[in-house]
Image (cartoon, rainbow, N blue to C red):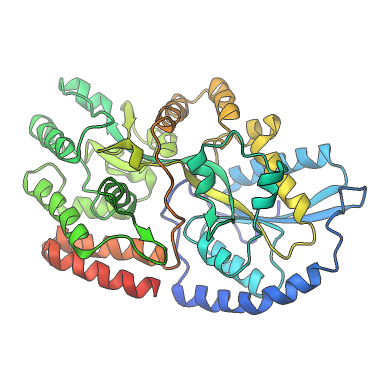
Length: 447
């Protein structure tokens, strides 16, 4: 193994609590990328991209984040590729979440980017916009990159400005996780996919009165909940290079949850803050401070490890077609790589080779290939993971079109939502004032 730093436990696929790259450092790094890429592309033009395809040896550099478990699984899968393609070997580098994107920006700006690298939707548009990522569209069209078994919206969620900038390494979607044991013990109904937001809040109020446990975590600070709600209103988080919502939209969102707090359906602000700032292992549904939490479906196993209670999961409230097959993370190829064809073939292998997919399991989310996902489900022994796969596979029949990949400044938008929502939660601002603060900060973040 080649950790770039001494790793700590990596976040499970889909978690959005990774330490964000500062805007200044990202801009500085990507500004350098803009200068470095033409030089790298020129150098790449001297290389033989057919190496490995006609007997020449290829050494492909690969960079990803994660913990030791992910590193072992990934190295095993890459070793399997080498076993089947002896002329291809790998220079493997990995590290924990923290600092990963700093390192990627540094490597890219220095003219020494990895051939193949892991990226997420916080930064895909940033790197694609700088022409750092290879457009994989021609490989898709030729069939060299087989995405025929991918959910359509999962594939589309890797497209930036008409170019396929990344291919999903795994899939997840939004999930409302609830404490099934608590509900059954008190003779209360379980939430269902398709219930409206108002019905969900009324249900949560009923749960709170009967069990003395708040029925739902307040998700007003949760960007993925806001995003789904906006899509159900015919809006979106982004529209082109601009915000896809107005101050009035956010005011309505904040007012919805102020009413829920006033009705006693949610925890108090201090406990809500705890849920906003905690990682997946300490979400309120497993600490017993709320009957529900708003997470990614594929985080169910990590939640289950931290409670003895039985958990259930359904879609977020409202029309489930507002949800989509989201890439938990992507594989992208450096546009200036000397071995683009081989790098793309490795992505194809990691997503479509039955042995490789079985090795990788669900560490990066549910397999993107639906046929192989079903096979992984059949062999899975973890009940929570089987539940995650089943729920997401069921929801796949209801998914709507994917939104555009988030634009630059997305990480700042997420953090500003937490700040504004907590101002409303603590009563430091009215919903309208908090919404205005949020929208103003967002416009600055994406400028």
